[in-house]
Image (cartoon, rainbow, N blue to C red; front, top):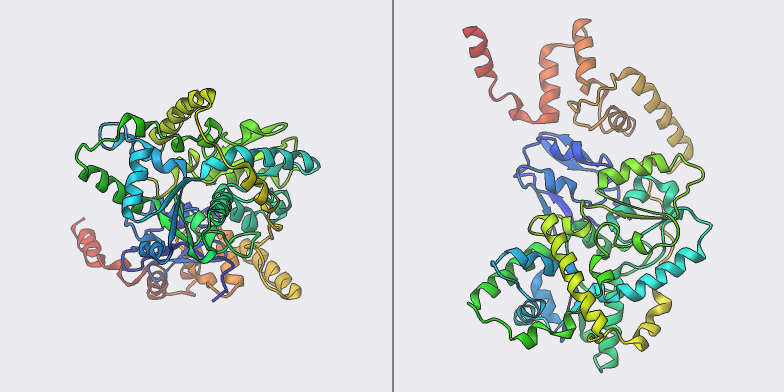
Length: 468
């Protein structure tokens, strides 16, 4: 078994999996195979984008999270919220639910501090603009906002790792800021627990095994769907105990329009220097990067790539329609614009920001190519030749009956001793026609790939055949 490069938040429940292959066919890095009637993950190809989670009809793919009770190990229990969390509640109780109500509910669950991470975006955006200007010789510079995209580039487009912006994600910057704030107020470092509420699996993986950093500033991760249900239940149980108008106008609710829209498509690119593109959806991103790798001189200065459709509003752990959630975020941005004009918000502590400003960059993003066939170059070259020879024998139909998503992936599996050539249904037919394979052997091969129950209705087949 290969040693995984990354922590993975996505796990396949083999008891619920029926080997339908929906996940295998949808994976942009071809990280999934079907074996013994179950989906099987190749960890060094998986980027935790969560697309398999979305398409699975049996809910056989789970997203890990930390035990919620871990928060009580700390005296200062800080929940770091993406703005998309607040936007989910707008259509749930047939009335507006204010950020102040949600904050009050979070405190009742045990948190001592609530901080929306987009509050750091305005200052972080200034650093991003300066970074783009400083690295104008690199085109295009690619945002590292989305960890699924970072890992996609590492494993599938390793030649582009040098184009990645080496700036921390807003969640990490927010954690740094709030930790420093509490330290200045007298808290001890071991008393502070920072917990991020994640809209997707990729951000969990990014916190557990950060790219370009040794360790995350965040102590724990809470799945957004879990916390959303807890808060919704709590607010329903309050039975009309609405906040006062004064509480509804809590200045702590303020996030700039730029911050509120940062996690949506064009949230970053509209403020970029030079020509910029915004692409959302992991399949569209993969298609574009395929073309970009072949272009020697790109005329795009900045690429904003968000793995989920509609950005973070389409995260796999977000509850509700992404279009309505994005609309609610835009509505809140409109209201915050008037608050900004009146200058009624407190803003960030500039002194604290200056103290962390020099720690916003990360180390280089290293390639983790899924095409690396062996550590030994000579062996790798031999395997490459084996793949080429195998591909000449395959029909190039990408039918998936062999348990691999494409003929190329199947050829790679053969070169790595993970599959046999006779698993190809087209070659089986040819061998049977030539008298070199019996029907019984074909049945055994299908059972090895698709499980013992693949022909459980074979008696029904014979009955129907006799009737005709």
